[in-house]
Each structure stands twice: as structure tokens, then as C-alpha cells.
Image (cartoon, rainbow, N blue to C red; front, side, top):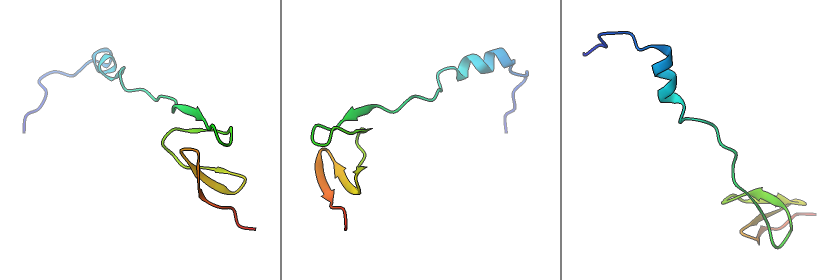
Length: 61
């Protein structure tokens, strides 16, 4: 197996890793319910499940 001939400095290593960072998810506002939610995910409003502004599962009770 090949091994590195020299130690990679922390500066060089960190410069390479700068592009990997956590990003906030994109949020949208539903036109039907007015709730803010993560895009491309189902979301709960008062016990009912919505996806793309459409009711998927009704609230029981």
C-alpha cells in the first residue's frame, strides 16, 4: 500500500476541507396552510399531514 512521503500540514489539510460546510435547509411557505416548512418534505399542521400544499393524511379526533 502506498503511504505519504511527507506529513500533510494542517494548513494544507484545512484549505482542502473549507468547501465542506453545513448549510441551512431551504424553507418554503405553504400557500394552503401558510406554514413554513422544509422543501420536498411532508409537514404537520394541527395533526394533519400535508405535502405540496395537499392534504395527505387527515387528523384523527
